Length: 142
Image 1 (spheres, rainbow, N blue to C red):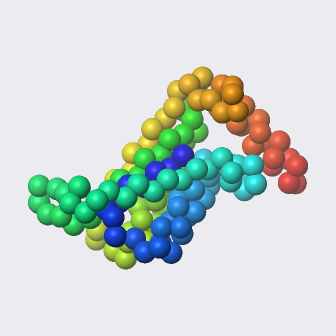
Image 2 (cartoon, helix red, strand yellow):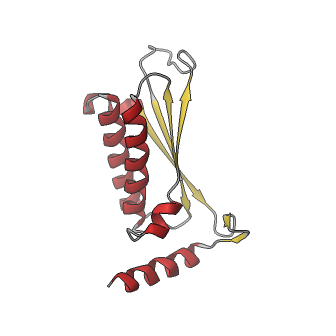
């Protein structure tokens, strides 16, 4: 899951839809998930728009962006985390019409969900289950 929190009015209508799809796709890529209908359907993205003035810093009122990413523990190596943060930051900056000089306005928080504490379809889903699904999907695509 990936959640973007932004001040209201910062993104255009097209930007809202586009950024959510892009963020979900980049998360799947960095997780190493197959590009399949099943895994795309599991990549949920949320947009939280907060009212103008609800988020400021001690320095100014320029918009800031928080991206919360929730993944199974072990799904992202340090290299994959770094790549995800870099790509997510670039996507958010592009969507908001900002440049790399504004990159400190985007914070990416990666939350690793402990194995055995994630459920779907009425049962616990373990990381090993997802790996098996991914391997099966990759084999079926080959």
